[in-house]
Image 1: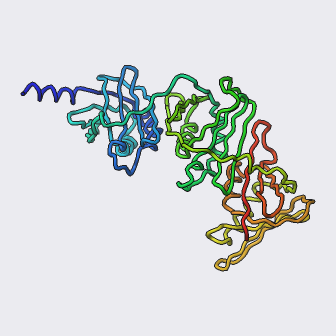
Image 2 (image 1 turned 90 degrees about the horizontal axis):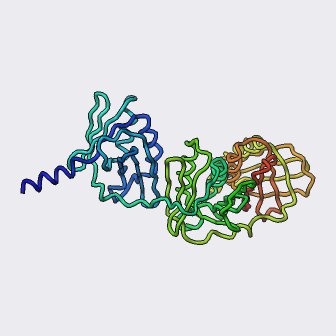
Image 3 (image 1 turned 135 degrees about the vertical axis):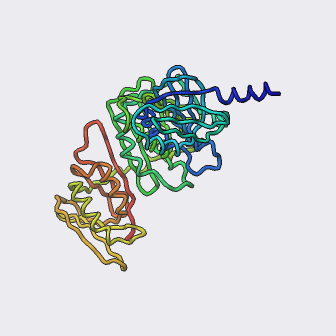
Length: 388
């Protein structure tokens, strides 16, 4: 009987002992901690999985919908694995001074963390309870330039729907063709579409369309902002999307369902247009929007002979009007828009350069485009009018 107890102790206590630099560990924990489930009914999802092997450690976080797995250089004294409460570990490591940190698995899933004169023990959980995270499929990989994808996400992510019931709109559609990459997002009231030509995707047939959930795009945006890599590997299977950026792999469950036929709503004959400086337009909208109806945020745009007037009024706050001088030679037009939607687009282009506003009439969708956009990127934003 005693032998059995001793064996049990050895099994639990012998595995995993590593030494890692605080700087390296904190960098990887920062990259992975945003995926950790904060309020979960499954306690293991609040933990990081640490796996120590011959070539360092692998750290994994998952909330079942998505996961991030990353590697970190470390001196491995004893290979093995353990799980550690993610938030507590992240907050604690942030407070430690620079230097080496030793992490050792003790009995009953407790984990000891030592750094200089600090000695801490945390209550972990059984490694066996940590969910299986899908492995990156090495077949049929598409390499996508980091700079292009980063730009596509920042120009569309704000137009994704927040309504959970409209789940096919809770993501952006990535469209890969042999020589171009595009992304489109819509919430039913506005649509952002950007395409970059001059790319080279030799393995892509006529086109490949992939719906990427908002949460995954948000993680991807963060990972792309913190990498020196010039390209990432993209792959998918029936259920999962995979993005490999350097030593980090993000996986996400696919959104099921059909993205709407966005091409049908792209305006064809918006032949009235006005060109204004983005900065001027943004400033005017922000001022006037202070006096718009709080719920709808609706403002009125009136364009007539060489003048663009933006106005709003509400019984609670008052009224406001701003005028911008700009060449305009078409019939006068008055149209209402949600001010926040206009500002989202102007912010996405950095409130710089000039922007072109294109209209057909006061009942049809308006279109906004950067006037001095680059040759490679075609960016347009379609916004439905409001009745005022």
